[in-house]
Image (cartoon, rainbow, N blue to C red; front, side):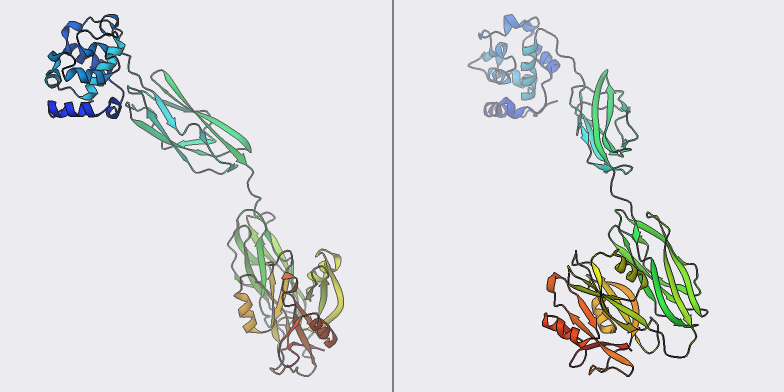
Length: 494
């Protein structure tokens, strides 16, 4: 291939004097072309041997001494100090610097034959190394380019893979075609480990009686733990007048596993009395959550039950929440429930609950660190007419401490709901609320709410009907919250 078109003798002479051979070369010399041009330069040299023509002493002209030195030929063709008869050869043969490189290459080889042209395939990248990949999953593909860096075409290319189940080849253009010198073909390979640990494979290309071996390797890992949903096991509605519907109770569902879980259904086996009212559960990512709600409409007096079942592809599915409530027909005063107070000494946190399952786990140590204070006050079951629903929120944003917050007021509920650090758990009991001056109606007594003002790096509230407890907490820096001069937050039935 010519590297420069010839314009004029004077122009090429100037270029030849200014540039070195390395500046011109863009591909290996062509020995066969050099041999042909060499014979045209001087027909008398057809039988020339290296020992006779290409020694270290200049005789007829410098071309004789130019083995692998195209610059010396360039000087000779410009005339003196070489042989003046050489002037004109450059023009008559239309020689380029590429031709001079070819001639110098032939002089270095003569009188032996020019080397036979041969293909040579090279792959990049090689080896092909994959990052650690979860067993059974497929990695992103790595593209491999095979280039012919030889001087002849690679033909009849064969391709084999000794571990095609784990090293998956696609988009392969390297099977069967001819790849010319300087050309290339390509393929993609992806990694899908079938077991943990080191995994290996070999990709082999055969061509022109040659072999190109490309090794592939990667490591299989066991991956994250499977997805698993966690939720409350029991929800108690308390007493509800027969034929009336309670406020909906919300159940928070959390994915405590290491992979996403797809929820296919949330259903009740007693929908006429425990009906699903809403659900946000579909795909629950690891560490994320969803919720569903259901309400209680007793169809008869006495204890009523249902199983709320969550079906998913998570570990332990199906999972059930046991729901219960009591249907009542009495027209007398509504029944009450007891809110039991607990204290966590290490955290100096207080907690109240009327939920039987929570009380059992607090008392038997399932929830570690909690003990009864001996104090309690009354409230109404959810859905009790003439009272306000109390919403409960939960936060783990202050790990290892967790905290609950209760409010009967819609405005507070909206504020806390908008805070991403708090999760709405549902309506847990009903209770009357005070007037704006803090007074409570007859047959009820004030409930005081005190805030720890962030002591211990985590918020906590204490609810009490005892003024002496209120005074004690204020002396420790706790802040009263509520209505009136003494800050009343709720009114407990007596």
